[in-house]
Image (cartoon, rainbow, N blue to C red):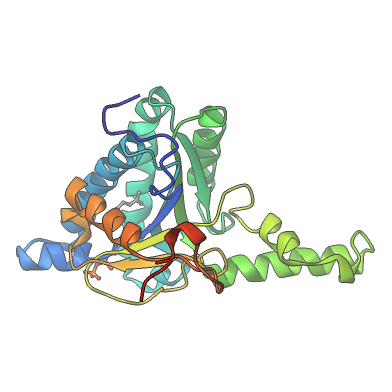
Length: 252
Ligand code: FPP
């Protein structure tokens, strides 16, 4: 266990999800091509994986390519595909050695066969690891995920494999890409934008959202710790009353 780890610390969310935004602006501010922003974004991603593991976070989900990102110029799309490929090829051994479990969420049907094989390989190699679960959301969009799930359920119902009345929240959660993960307690978005952008719409129903002006390539340990501190300052009510121990009992 590393020095910064705080096992069992309830104030550290077990699942943190991040909308990594601002790579393009980071590059533009420096007169660099957007690709350089993404390259530096990958460095920030690597840093954040280490920091998250060190701080005792169990699941880290990173929004790396959305279903809407296909609308970007073809050169940028293929650069981002290549970046995922390079990341898996270069970092898999180290991630595995660090006991990181890799998961990819999102529609796989649109990925090239070699990229699909690569992500399947990364998941298979790290399947039994027990440290941080790194979830890469790639070709991910919440609405797409929900549509895929609805189609699956409808097909099962039509074939008589499940009863329509048996479908409840748990049934749906169990068929989303995130089926065996806890919901995120904290969603961070960088770069000052304050939209949710089709990210974990179902899973983040009760999450706290922290928006930071830091551009993703600059996101560092201090920025992550500040987001966690903001999370701790918030009161989580789940639509009801807060925990009795949190209430200001006896206050005037
Ligand atoms: C948003 O910045 C970022 C993305 C669309 C891609 C995120 C990719 C990385 C962080 C690199 C690591 C990637 C992989 C595939 C592992 P933006 O380009 O929208 O920035 P802007 O809003 O300033 O233009």
